[in-house]
Structure formats: C-alpha cells, structure tokens
Image (spheres, rainbow, N blue to C red):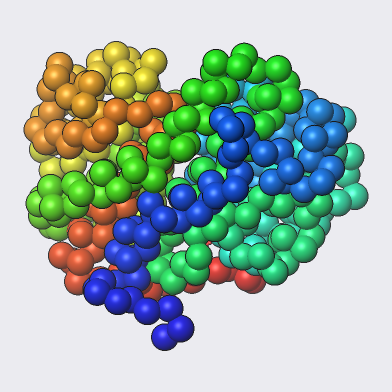
Length: 367
Ligand code: G6P
C-alpha cells in the first residue's frame, strides 16, 4: 500500500491519531499575528466576501455534517444567513438564489457525483462565487470552483471519514471568522476564535489520550442493537456524525436527535437496552441539555455523557467521560474525537471490516 498503516491495526485508527498533525497542517500559514489571512481563499477573496450576504452550503455524508456545524457558526459569528443542504436534494429542486449568496461545496474527495452536479448546476445561477472546501487538490470539485480552501488532512483511506471531517471543521471555522471580520465582527470575539483554533492541535492530542477509557466504554455497546446520540446547537450535527460513524462501521442502528426534540418521539424508544450518548460541552445550552438528559434517566435509559471538565459535576449519568474545556470553535472538533474512537472500538469488538464496511464506498462517483 502506498500509505502505510505503521503500528496501527486499521487505517481508521491511524487517521484518528493523525488529527493533531492534520489540523496543525490545515492551520499552517493561514493565521499570522492573531489574524486569519484572507488570501488563503484566493486573490479575489476580500472583494467576494464583502459582497457575500448569505451562504448556501451543499455536501453529502460526513461533509454535510461539517456544513451543518458551519451553518451555526456563519449565522452566529458572521451574522450572515446560511442554508445547508444535502447535495442529492439540492440538485433536483429549483432553489431560489438571492443576490449576494455564496455557494459553498464541501467534499473530502472532490469527486462525489451529487456534490459535483450541484456545483455545476450553481454555475448558471446568480451566486457571488462558488467555493470549495476540499481535501484533494486536483479534484473535479476544486477545478470547478472559483474560491478554494483546502483541508490538508492527507490521504484518508478508511471509508469512515475522521481526519477529513475535523480538518473540514477547522477550514470552515477559518472561513466563518473571515466572513465575520468582513462583516465587522467585534475584535475581541474574533481574537478569541483565532486563539481557539491555534490551541486545537494540543487539545486534540490531549483528548486522544482518553482512548483507553473509551475502549472500556465500547464493551457495553458490542451486543446492542440500537443507540441514540443527543446534542444541541453545533453539537447536534456532532451527534449526527457520532451516530453515522457507529452505524457505518459497527452496523448498530444509531440515530441522532437534537436533544430538545427528544420528547417529540425518541423518548418512546428509551429503555434499559437503549444506550444514549449525550454530547455535552459547557456551552450556553448545557442547562437545557441537562434537563433533557434527566428525562432519559427517568425512563431507565443508560446514559453516557461526554462532558467537559467544567460540567463534570452536576450531571447525573451512568458513565461520564470528561474532555478538556474549550470554546465554541474548538468544541465540535474535540467532542467528535471520542465519538470516532467509540465507533472504532465497538466495530473492532464486533469483528467488522473497519476500514471497508460492507456496501459503502470511500467516494461515491456515480449517482
Ligand atoms: C461517502 C463516504 C463518506 C463521505 C461521503 C461524502 O459516503 O463513505 O465518508 O462523507 O461519501 O464524500 P465527500 O468525498 O464528498 O466528502
């Protein structure tokens, strides 16, 4: 194989552990003196961002989840309306394009048929420009786009995406910050966002040390049929990504819900056989999330809470995994890591083909 697995049993595990470096590489040369360098997007970026007053994100699979997180950031930090859509839906409807909208396609491979088709369809529309966040430099999606922001994850072999996702989040955070700056975001908030990104490689390395604890938790999942992932805000798509990882490689049916929606359906499924994984960093929604989780406990659900050290106390769960505390840009990256490791260890215990799960392909180049 051109890319070696080295000491690792699977490519997926290797790629999970490459994330401190992959994220550092994605940040490399893009921040200087506490500022994101707008030129990272291309020479015309400054003028194009000035003209952008809404964003349409289109992607598939894991890349779609990165887009959903970015949608929260773009609206809350930049104050710019943002829609996020699955490419296979977007390409077959007749979207209304408001003047001043930037099209943003996200793709690890740059070859996904639906995302590429959506990008091509966008060409004839009234978009400010078409931008790609992508991991493969010479790919079709990169060649088709006017603005490009590369993730620098390096080759990803495991079908279940890991380092491509976290580097997408980093690239999208850089973009959201730059858009926010173009729209006059206050300097202190901007500086804090940049600082969070600079600290990420270290935080990731620190979080990956929890591997042993996560492997122990995974034992409880090996015989389960179903799992429910809960989060709120940006951690709802992170929960979606955790559920996707588990179902892709362990073949356990997993669903993710916005925790506030629990009472509108999934609570009926909760019993002692249903593990519930809560993604619970200490953000502005933590108290709301805690009360959602009490509903799970009251129904006898087995609760796994992934919290940061500032909420470790005061949360009643069967199993608590404590992660480092971090800000709003860093947390979705950091909280993704234990979800990747959980899926990995459960899949190993179940003896599935971790790197090449049945029926799935790394890149879906046909419809
Ligand atoms: C396939 C892969 C996923 C990936 C999705 C989108 O389903 O198995 O891991 O997220 O395609 O791929 P892209 O290359 O466009 O990000």
